[in-house]
Length: 314
Image (cartoon, rainbow, N blue to C red):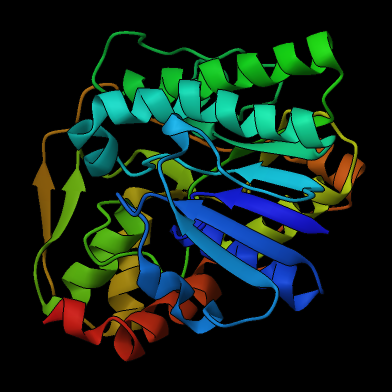
């Protein structure tokens, strides 16, 4: 297939490009490099089946030729990024989604939307099944990402109903792994970089809030399976093993061998107390389930930061 990936220079987009090229597909990544990094794609430049275009998907999607699938991943995804770029984040979820799905409609291609567990907001139902509509503050600071993705899901469903576009929606839960930026601002990255620098690990709140962490290789297997299927979703993609933030801090300190202390700071507004996916639908529809546990995934991520991101840690 020829697959277009918006946000292709990002953490997830670059790993998806690797997986698709490895199995023989052609990949065209589009990214405006606001939060994506060309360093994530350096190893692919010059590959005969890879192409990169620096472009803002909110302004259109200038891709010529046949396209069999469009994976729409373009959006700031970490809280520091979308809080710094609120209007750009909303535009990626609205205009960006429209341009991406219009490309799929015109070419008769499969369209896969990378949505997020954030559409569940601060959930009142735990764990979260896909039937749950969420509990989101529509005007809070986090709403630019939450509501941007909720709008993107609504547009995807409307295109499927109105035009018969072959659409699929995945809701991605906390994913981590190599190629995350040292300054990303997400909890796994924060803790690893702080531990390796010998700085205090910043825990927001008392550390009892929970998350479910999915290693990037597992997540990408789910994305490729969704691209290959005719499943409309939405499907949760995440690791259902649930850890408190305090437990995560302890795991990272042990694996890094760091003596960093833990510093507690006030909890940000609308930060969800618990987050855990139900993944039965993904198992049934895609034959997918995560296979890499948190400790193994953290070890791989720490090793990558040691060898590749060393300069960013100094």
